[in-house]
Image (cartoon, rainbow, N blue to C red; front, side, top):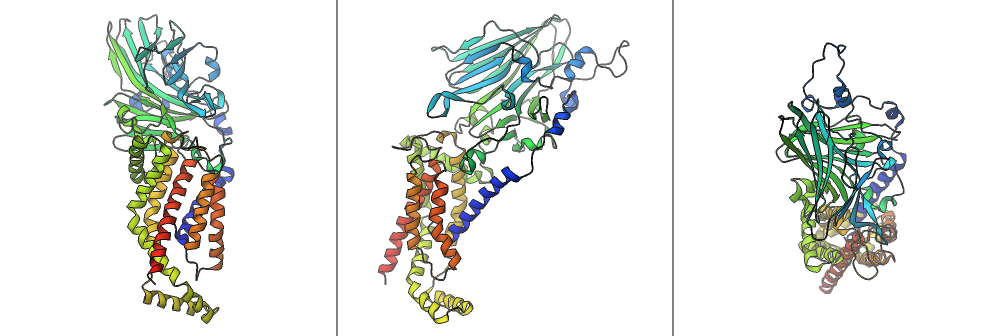
Length: 569
């Protein structure tokens, strides 16, 4: 990026976007919750499409017209998820594998806590791990599941029982099963099992229903993720990549592919669709949770917002088709719960389209191949920092001819600087005649003053795509490089990379012709190394490493071509 004129434009657009983003956070439309708190929902059945609900039950002669039987009255509030206070005194089952530590509330068998044992929050404190699910107040994020029926059934407000409160994957085992049981006096028994495997973030959640009631049992299965509205906190400013990553709800279907739903849109425009082979997720930077129904099953997907305790909560839900279980038989309902990092190489093996949780937006067509190439290089060098450097070199080689033409044009422009200065002295303040004379000279010498723009414009999508790869890839989170850089996802602790990038920019600036440039533009160009040095001082080291490597390679290429053109006389 040695041609400073298009680079200046790109930089100003980039800085303008981040300033706009900051302005929106501080002065944009405020989220109001007072009206939402007043409208706490008491009856949720109308939020489900008719196909998701069991068939109506006729009222008996003892019931007043329009009244629901007792079972229906309970089901009417099944999706009115209980506040955390309701289950704080309930026993928690602790489940530990080699990669996960879960807490499961015996009320509903709800997963209320999850710690990722291989992902510390900060490198300096390895004991404090990343938590995705959380049962505490405004940080509430839980995974719920249960059954729907007009007959006896457990849902996420039902009390389960467990033989013990602690399960741990033994050193010689590859699988851990956690059974919770519920029995109704009618003869319906449900065992809710959590099946975890070594090294995996996927949890198989099964409801095994044994019907000994003497009547046909008819019902469905549902899963939902529930999250409270996250309050804005100190997130590190615009230099924190997490600010630009999507945080919200995602749905996947084979027809529409990945659909993002912002939390702010849930109240005004609830999502409601029916499709097969899909899944739902709640996504954050680097990590996510998802419910994945069995393949081929036709499920109803929806969203909902309500405010039971003073802050909004958002729910993403799926409901399965009804099944009938004859007396004396059993049926197994199953779904997969994923809670973990966005590991791009393994997500497609878990469910089709799950890799879309790593969302690069409109630059996906470029970002996906770039990440594949970056991962391929990493497999050989076993260091993400060196992988970034070698990827940058590869990109420079791909665009070598384009940038060569750019630098040749700039070198010829540099040779014309003395003649341009003569024209300035000859025409003085007559800018029109000055411009005409310069255009004639450029035409005569076969120099295109805009020759450096096309290579820059072609590379801009690649640059932004790589920016998103470095921003979204959990594989680079807390990855070490060399010496003082022990974490590529945070700023350079000694600001060496930003300083090195500034040096490259200053030297590049000296090779760039400025004759005929507007004085204000020339001043802005001189200030750019300082502006970028300050900005990059707080950016993740992985991003600055790419930019500094690119700047250094561009400087070397431009210096060589400039000397070669100058030697030709």
